[in-house]
Image (cartoon, rainbow over all chains, first blue to last red):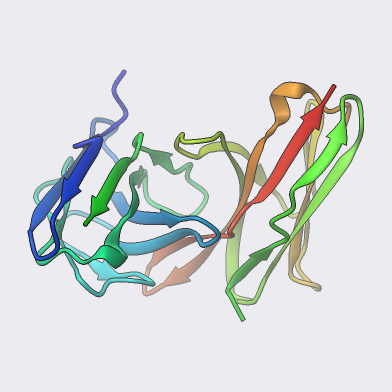
Length: 113
Length: 112
């Protein structure tokens, strides 16, 4: 019963490097999300995908890109990592949004040095 | 003003106490509301939805006040295992989809 799986769990990057966080869900959900969580800031939405084939910016999209590869997978890319992107990243999904429960992956701890 | 606001706490209470948290939201078009629980270094998990008429799940009671734009969570007979951060979530409609917005969370510490 995997739910939402995200990789990698931990990553250290140098400033300017690029990387992609992978996320996949096996619940046949339509909506997927990427959040970052920083101390004292709570969860902030980076990008979301309401359905396969669509993506939209959230509260803090700068420095990130996303791809909804198919219904299962939603990846987050950092093109040129900056120390300000050091954070915990959570991928999440829900059936359609609205009153549906949001299920989270276990998080990816990213440090940019 | 942040769209969803919570008192960060921490609320430090003894076992058996009753504790209540509030969460205010700024967008009157918000349509659905939830409380999530997050343990240290773990992902958030749904605690309960919040319905217009209020709802209860065991020791937990959630209320919605649309006129004043806040939701509340009441925990009765606190247990040590209730120690966690409680996140308020507000969904607002946007172009046919829903955007879940999280509050910063309220930290609860239950001590013996």
